[in-house]
Amino acid sequence: MPAGGVFILDTVLLKVASRCNLNCSYCYVYNMGDDAWRAQPKRMSEATGERIAEQLGAVYRAQGVPFSVVLHGGEPLLIGRKRLAGLLGALRQQLPAPCGLHLQTNGVLLSDEILDILIAYDVGISISIDGPAATHDQFRVDHRGRGSHAKVTEAIARLRARREALPLFAGVLAVIDPRTDPAAVYADLKAYGAPGIDVLVRDGNWDQLPFGKASPESVEYGRWLSGLLEAYLTDPDPPRLRLLDDMLRLLLGGRSQKEGVGVTDYGILVIEPDGEVQKNDTLKVAHAGADRFAANWNIHSHALSDILASEAYAVYHAQQRPAADVCRACPDLGVCGGGMVAHRWRKGAGYANPTIFCADQKHLIAAMRRIVARLPLPELQSSAA
Image (cartoon, rainbow, N blue to C red; front, side, top):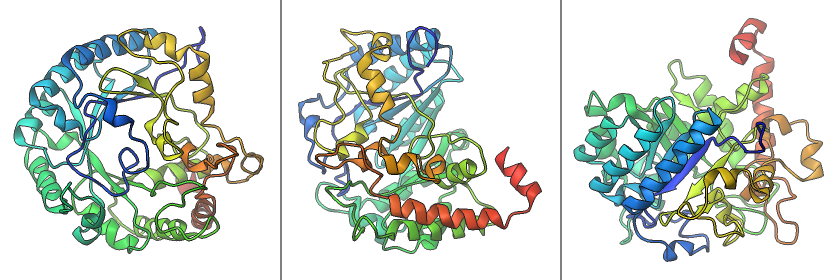
């Protein structure tokens, strides 16, 4: 936190569309009990986009540290080509490189015309795909229950066929099904040619166990991630795998690069289609409304700099640090970090609990420690750097 009491902003998620053309069964926005999206306009207006760009530009000039803006949803490409181009133009005018503009999409609407716009404004592209069709199409379905794998793989092929778009391909994002073979999923994800792979556990908490997890003490996700680790480390030509890379880097004394592991705090805000400013929307996993500030902050009536300097934001920012005594005393805390905040939730105890994936994290970190212990000293020093 710099002088003046304003937190550094790291990531802004712009919810440019409040609806989605898919109905993924595990989606925390639509299928975990929070229906706040119904009150939002379907698409962000041009006026709201321009106001957001102005405010983000002011924050960037004030803090002097670049940050990332991620177009999110719902499905962000539902905003349409014209509004997408206008929004990106306004953002890029206020946020030149090294500020990053990114798109997280399900890929179904990723046309050549959309790619032209993303190329023009240097927007990184991440595509959600859960692995082979048999896995992906169980969960990532449209509103008629039809699988989306074929359309997503077509979008990836379209992106890769465009030489000028290929440098924008940031990676693929997969949500784990712990019943699958992690080596097979890894091989499938790598085959899409993305430079990076990210994996996410299924959302849940102490009151609602994640899909595939039998009990708080079971390690289905830990075993799956350990299998992924083995496939990754035995690959002679691997892509980046953010979660495992971050955890290994932390184990070797380095720093994480994204939220979810380690004890580094990140400044994250969400801006809804109507301009409402909220907390990290993954908090919806805890309970309906958990991602909302008590104040009705909106970029049309409030300054982002004032929000970042507020006591309410300070409390939200501090919430990233684990509050459970067992976590603070744990030797794995520097790597685990207590997990995602929403995964710590338990009715009656709030967030003052370990992550529901505590046993899984310990299982994975133990596997990593065994691997690190076998590495020669020069390789250890090189990896930590």
